[in-house]
Image: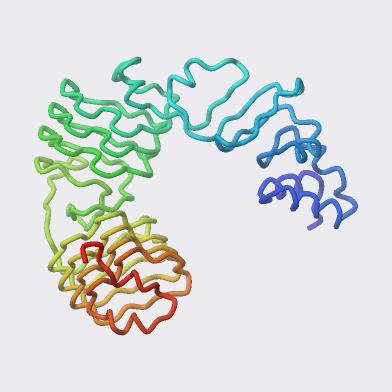
Length: 334
C-alpha cells in the first residue's frame, strides 16, 4: 500500500520529537511540506519548532511546562493535563479541557453532584462528607482518587460505572455503612479476595460491612491458590500482603507491574511466574516470602524496588544475578 499525505500525517502524529518530522521531510521528497499541512501541533513546541508548523489553528498543550504560543493565528487551545473543575468552569471560549478533575475545593464550591464533564475524582474529594448517603458517578469518570470517599460514614450504597479503570488506595476507608456495591466492570485488584460464582478481583480495600456486590452476597476467603483474570493489567500495592496461606499464583501476560509490598509476608508462597511484559517490581514486593524457592527474572524488568527480595527464600540465588541491585536485599529498618 502506498502512503499518501493523509496516511503520513496520521502516522507522524505519533512521532516523538521535532527531529522525526524533519528527518521524514529530508528523507522522502514527496512528503516535503508535511508539517505545513498540520492545523494543530502534534508535539510540544519551542520557538524553533513553532516556525516549522506555520498553519496551526488549534494549539495543543500536553503538559503544564509546555511553552504556549498565542500569536494571533491560534483560535483554540486544547489542554491535555489534569485541571480542577473550577478552572474548566471559569474558562474562556478559546480553551478546551480534556482531563477535568473534581477536587475537594470544587465540591465545597459546587456541591456533591459530580458534573458530567468530569473525568476523574481527586484526592480526598468527598472525604468526611458525613451527610453523603448516596452518590451518582457519571459515566464520564474513569478514575477515583486516593481516599476519595474515606470516612463517608452515612454512605450505604454506590455504583461504579464501567468507565472506571483506576480506583486508588483507601478509597472507601471507614465507610462503615456501605453494605451494597455495584461494580459494572470487574477489572481491578485488591488486598482482599472476593468470591461470588467465580473468583473475582476488585481494586479496593473492601469495607468490613460490605455484604453485596452486583446484587449477590459475597464471601471473603483466604485461599492457597488464586487465578488473576486476564483483564487485569496491574497488581496494585499491598494486593496480596500477608495472604499467609497463598502457595502459588499464576500472573497473566496482561500484567505489566507488581506494586509495592504486593506479596510481602506471603510465607507459604513457593512458586511464582513473572511474565515477560512486566517492567517494574515495587518496593518490598516479595519481602519475607521465606518459602519461595525460585523465581524467574525476565529481561523486561528495568526497575527493581528497594527491599523487593529482602529475606526471600531464594535470596542467595538471586544475589548471583548481576542485574539485580544490592538494595533489593536490604530493609530500611536495618
